[in-house]
Image (cartoon, rainbow, N blue to C red; front, side):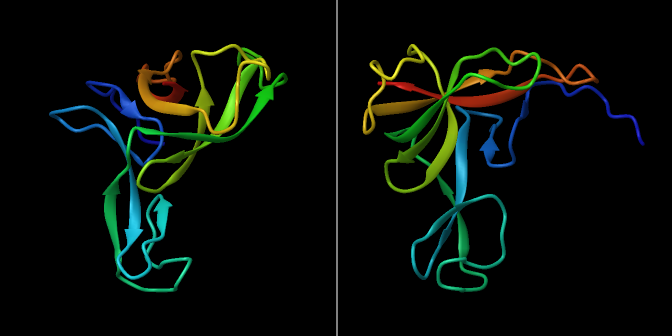
Amino acid sequence: MAEQAKASGPLPVVPFLRIPAEGAPYLEARCCGKCGAIFLGERENCSKCGARGELEPKRLANEGTLYVYSIVHRSFPGIETPYVSCIVDLEGGGTVKGNLIGIEPDPAKIRMGMPVRTVFKVAPRKDAEGNEYLTYYFEPR
């Protein structure tokens, strides 16, 4: 395996997180020009209408609403629990899974449909080469 050099800045934790040289980071999806369906990640065809070559990059909004959540009490070693895993419907389209921060992991404090915003932070751990990763979370607005 070839050795990788340490990156000069944080790397995106997922391929659909964009870190421009100028400006703030953002999430990017693919939008079908025929039917308007929105998908995360690279693809050639629209899974909804089957169109080929119609998918264009779309910058996703940083605000949305909490669609559903789950409070996680057991995880891999080294992952602090409990935490809130969630799915968020973003304004203008796009549905993204992430973690909800800035709120107690208590069902009495979290409500479906609550307004949230995307926040970007450097992940708490580095990889074996010492690289930092930029990740995204959701927090109540």
